[in-house]
Amino acid sequence: MSINRNTSAEEAILKAAEEVFLSKGFAMSTTTAIAKLAGVNQALLHYYFRTKENLFEAVFLKKLQLVTVAMYEILGKEGIPLMDKIKMQIETQFDFVQSNPKLPFLVVSEVARAPERSERMGVMVGKRVQQALGKLQEELDKAHEEGKIRKTSAVNLLLSVISQNVFPFLIRPIFQAITNMPDGDFEKLMASKKEENVAFIINSLKIKS
Image 1 (cartoon, rainbow, N blue to C red):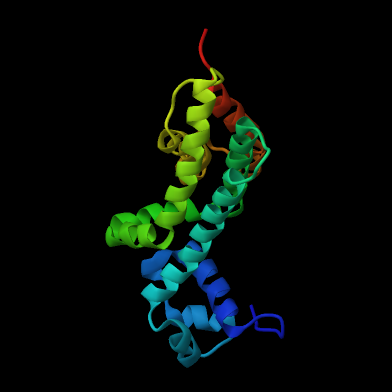
Image 2: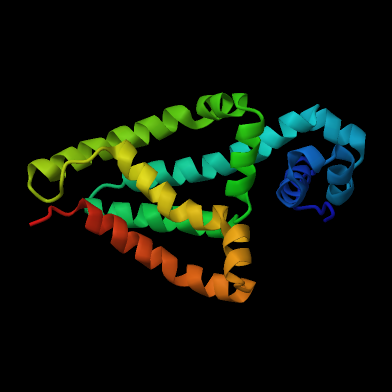
């Protein structure tokens, strides 16, 4: 990776840091390796981010913001049926995880290693997530009152979506090892998983006769 006229030094550092953190994890990553990959010197990296910890959180704040902004925008769209919004939300989140397949494992492992990270993540994006969940809960309650869906909470629905979308990528290394599944076959499996997740979650909201 090298800096060109369309890429600022800060952007290059963030891109390099993401690549290094995802491939090596936080503990095994070094600012020296990140600076080298970004094509900058250590002093410039230090100028922008000061520490490896700050750089790590900057990378994941950017990722978290992408997800939460998409969630907020989808749920805030007017004139779109609730089920269509939920479908869009599931698909958007799945596409994000599929594009960042190593991210779930790194986030879980780093939160386990440093529990205070979860509190900082809450500060970073918590307000926007809570606003989105509030909007969603209003629509879920209205749909339930109209007899369209069973009573459910927005938080429970979000957990269901995360479970269905994230879990396969979180356990991918173990799953492929025990099933002896090649990378290509796993990718084919995931190609159909998004549609299955949408059907599963939508069906779970329907009132059982």
